[in-house]
Amino acid sequence: MRIRVLTALAVLLLGVPEVAQEAAQPALHADRVLVLKKKRTLQLLSQGKMIRSYKVALGGDPIGPKARQGDHKTPEGAYVLDSRNAHSQFYKSIHISYPSGREREAARQRGVSPGGDVFVHGLPNGYGWVGSSHRLKDWTDGCIAVTNTEMDEIWQAVADGTPIAIRP
Image (cartoon, rainbow, N blue to C red; front, side):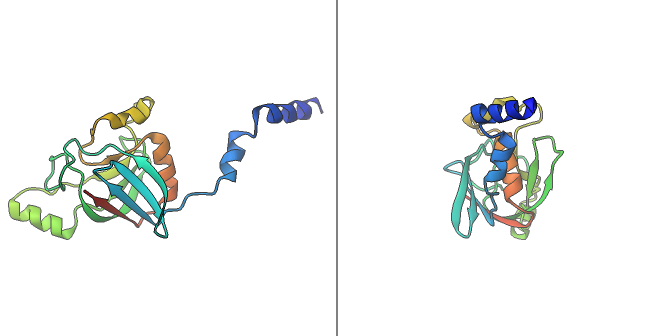
């Protein structure tokens, strides 16, 4: 009896436990993702309406589309979020289907590799403490980086096969 009274008192004084609060919030579900490189934002869209927006860090040389492996550019175009890795070298990662057939052919004609391994991901493992300050400088090799907490939200909100548009 005493434990129930103390628990009820703690709930009244401290509020509803965090788990119950999370359950009360409706789950995000995005049917599209839009990245605006110039604004450094990633938007989750549902039925054409933005449901969440995140500030991001991009490739270290973000202006212009990715043309070859090692150029540190984030691609531009229409792709698909096609697979995920919960145990990557970054805190969770969702693969972007770059390069397209057109991009592969353009790179072949120039005699270079188009690159690949472009992801939406969290911070490098062990560096979660950096938090949102990671956005002070574009630092990825061409990926789109968010905080680990934001990555958890995105991970839950998008399914494999979700379209992603990356615009200049």
